[in-house]
Length: 225
Image 1 (cartoon, rainbow, N blue to C red):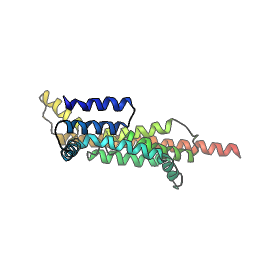
Image 2 (cartoon, one colour; image 1 turned 180 degrees about the vertical axis):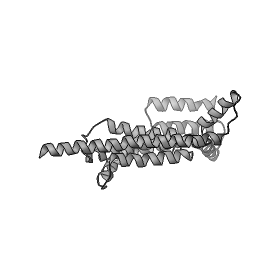
Image 3 (cartoon, helix red, strand yellow; image 1 turned 135 degrees about the vertical axis):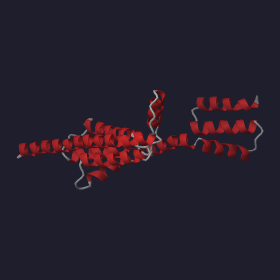
Image 4 (cartoon, one colour; image 1 turned 135 degrees about the horizontal axis):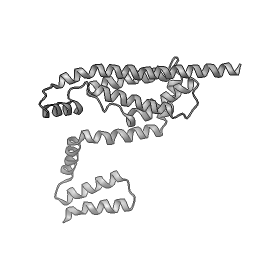
């Protein structure tokens, strides 16, 4: 019955609005001590649980770090950096990100970037700063939307090149269910032309955006003279 004291610690901690991390850690400590473990054994259990679930825990570590960085001006720093870079355009910036996203996804590194990790705190503010430098009005939704679309295109068409990704294994399983034998490597090789076409199409859209912004800026400058 004493091990249930951990539940009481959680209830009291949340009712009194203490820090959730401290409440959960305190609850685990009380439960361990009540179960007859010494403090070093409880600490060892903490370490083992973290090590066993480290891949799940990475998300909960990265997201608070990004939130803290944003609170201390990460987006503003990103905008300032891209605004000071000569020759930077929204199209060139997003094409560079598309290459990076497709290449890393093709190597199986699908979680190295994403909407929460890179698009919102870095890529979208940098793209907005580049677009404003090209004469686009501030606050347009089109540029952040294109930044998110670039991430999706790079991930979706890049990950299929990696033979151990879930989508490839799913297709192999479905084809085998219909009596069609296909190796994961074969499907991955056939995904390369598709990825190249997706890159060409999306990069063309970004180049057309650069051209449209240049024309709009030229018209504004012509009207001002």
